[in-house]
Image (cartoon, rainbow, N blue to C red):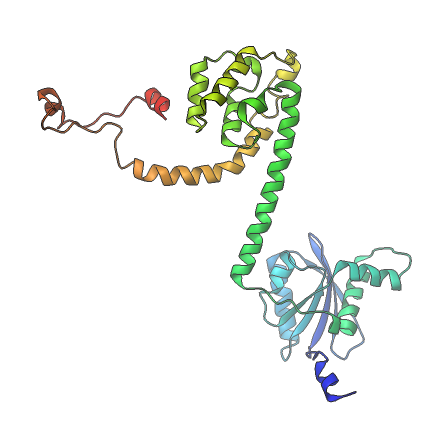
Amino acid sequence: MSDKTKSALPVTPLYAAFVGIDWGDEKHAVSLCAAGADTVQRATLEQTPEALAQWANGLRARFPNGKIAVALEQSRGALLTGLLQYEHLVAYPVNPKSVARFREALHPSRAKDDPVDADLILDLLVKHRNHLRPWQPDAVATRQLALLNEQRRHFVDRRTALTNELLSHLKAVFPQAPELVGVDLGSALATDFLKKWPTLQGVQLVKPAVLRRFYYGHNSRAEHLISRRLALVKAGVALTHDVALLSPPQLGYSNPGGATRSAAAFHRPTRTAHSGALRGPSRCRPFCQPARSGSGAGPAPARRAGRRPQPFPQRVRRQLL
């Protein structure tokens, strides 16, 4: 073998001990073997920060002159996060498929047993760690971006599931709703509309001016679209009059825990942020500015100029907004 080939081989670091952990939700099976020893010590470890700290500090006191390699079937999670807090522990994530195939090769019965799995993970670490990589955390910004992307995917999937559930409800009791609120059932217009009027019978009791004001308040101002929707409300025929289907417990999109309320929650942070940004400068001004004295103001406005402006009544303010 040439010198070039020898230099290409990975250098295996020396460890004072090796640990294989088969993790669980509440407790973990642990198999430990000191470097150069043949005996395996088995124990269980509770999934609590206190138990993990006591165990890690005990290993530090027992093996003060070297680091300890710890293999586990996790690339992220509570156990791995806890292990990374201790500099003397070096985590080696192991692919669960590798452990399963290793178990199948050595134990054809395929009976899963936590102590045996911990021994298998330990055996992989001791004999085949050249094929494993110690866990190296990415930069903080990279990990934050990955978490944000994962959360966004989760929210999008959750929102899609809720809107599909909502559409299923609407097809059964209010099929005109998608035309009245638009194709995006998770929008603020759709959720607010369905919370106010969860059935066609309910929206037909409302005056057209109220509906028009509602659409204007949600930035839907296209006259042809509003006219078509108002005509649909006027000429619409209810699919069902069954009280059992139209009662609030059955209308999952209208009760407090229903799909619409949940879907609206995904928009609430964005809407709140925009509302806060818009509300900041607007609060600096009253609704009514005092008339300025000067030419054209007249004597009466001039007398009122020094008065404190009175805000509009709450009802009138809501209509303006």
